[in-house]
Length: 401
Image (tube, rainbow, N blue to C red; front, side):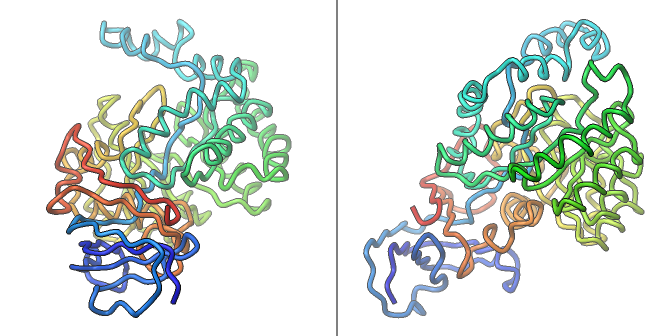
């Protein structure tokens, strides 16, 4: 067997579901050929092979490369001034009436060229990569018109070409109502379904379709209209569900066999049970919970009871979660939502890969998958969510390099 690169002397959390727990192997070896995992297991069982490059990781922990499965990484401007106003006592409504809120980001994003969007997003992407992220999902949703939504998605695709990282893109035209819609949500949704979505699908710049189902955004009927068209065009769906109230978002997502339902603070047991039956992943976003000072926590015990997969993501966005650290999101998931170390490590690898529909390629260390690794200077896996502000990454491997 010919091997391009061999990592030896490792303690590996494979996340292989056929193994107990996190699939830990002591004194392990990982072999890569043509960017994919050619062999993984105990060093004593490694077959004889010719190795071009052999690396001793000296007892360090190795996990799959981290997966940030929910971000809004590409946008124009920032909302630091609004943050300052909120600290001074201004309400969300007051800021919105003054031209702030999501529409301020829409205005800045519409004014930005594709190159400007890429340039602004690169530092955010690089911050995630520096913590071991090898795959990131990036949503549109700050254009709210055909040209800008497509420009956001093309910028996201370009980020994956500019840096050694895998990018999946999600069309989120049903994020908010643009000012030119004059309050007519149904007409705007119809425009998404008959105008934006077919063009984006034809151009192949989106891997999935998302929507924000909430009282301040879109209703269940409007969301279902978008999902019907997405499914007809062959695009999987996901949903911002039940963040601020329970409008049945989790159940609706499950009805369309959504890849994931995200946020879920107000989801009830009926919604959780529906997600379990559909195989829809719960993506928890502790950064948003923290930043906007939410008090209603996601129903973690119900998710455990019904054995719903739990993923964790940054929700990096300018308004409610300006977070570019998946490691800090892991700590928040532990301290705020009381997730276990095992749930957290799985939540940013295997379960996050499920949330993107990419588990056949990434998320676990198994033969045939991309050789995406994170090598850590830690003595136990609990150190990953334990630290706040300390990055213990030793090396990040993307597709064997």
